[in-house]
Length: 426
Image (cartoon, rainbow, N blue to C red; front, side, top):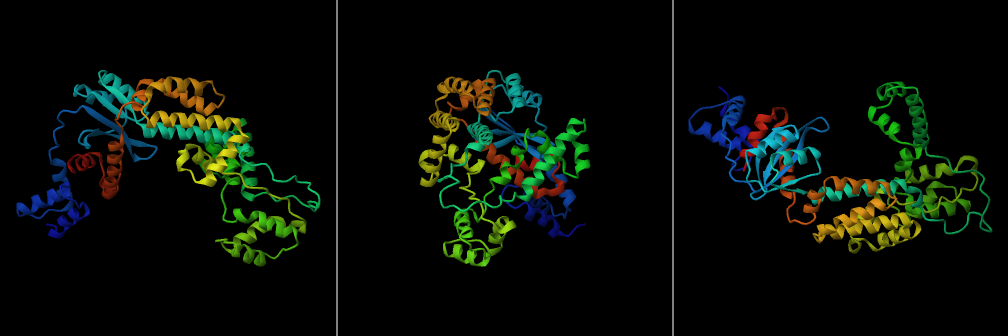
């Protein structure tokens, strides 16, 4: 027989009042026997599940056993925030079968999944479906980011003075390109050339020695600019001091250590090596370096400004967004669409949804129009989500707790044991 500490060690791993591990250990202690881990797990699996009872508002969402490959579904009673059912897969038929046994369900809170929508319509045609506002806002954010990415050439501010200003020394050599940008452009051209020859993505990866995810990114990008945009816009610790370094370089100061000390006095938080790497781009030919100009905001920064409430923006970010909207009418209209949607969502004005969709569809912002058309396919649930007080917050909280339980159990997290842990740990 196993040492008694082993049985209680399982309980320590599953600490918490009311957890199956503690219940099993108390059971073993009460009957005066010592059990091993496997026996205790069998006892947990044999525990009866709680009765479901009457459920009027149901929450449904999926979780990953293995992200991208294997998923399960959990059902939540939105009145008590307690899990009711957990099953393998995320097919609509399984949800419909459960709903047929519970005709009392009046409201179903879900994400934008088409499978759950079909299952809810088939199993509970009497219930109102409510699309979660968090997922609606996240989907809108993805459309905004795609729109900003398509217009990234307009993010840069025009130079403050012309390049051929009087007194400016002539440029003797251009700035050297970043190595990663050069490599990505070469890989993009090679991947598309091989794709045109009829090679599969797996074969292209073997040919070029690239991971399949990298090949997929290269092949799906219509142009090399789409691939290198993130690298070109990546923020760097030297960025706020580039203008000063450029001016001092053209004044003849070429000592990296001296320039490092100068910008350090101005508050530069980085190290000298980063300054040396930046200046390395100017050194070939020892000519005057062209003015790099102000660095444009990254796609993620611009998206964040557009998606943030105007009253919550910092003054400098609000000023940058104002100038960005003035430079590009498309981004100005995009910001207006986002703010109308936010007002509709926070004010529970689902009756405005039709007008908002029509306006977005008529605009020439393709990602936003695609998002609007997608809302029309799930119109009733989206309108309910923008009108009714229900949300999937309790579902997301249970998903987070489920992930914690799954990680605690490591390799023993088979579906039957995980199901007991989720349903009984109340």
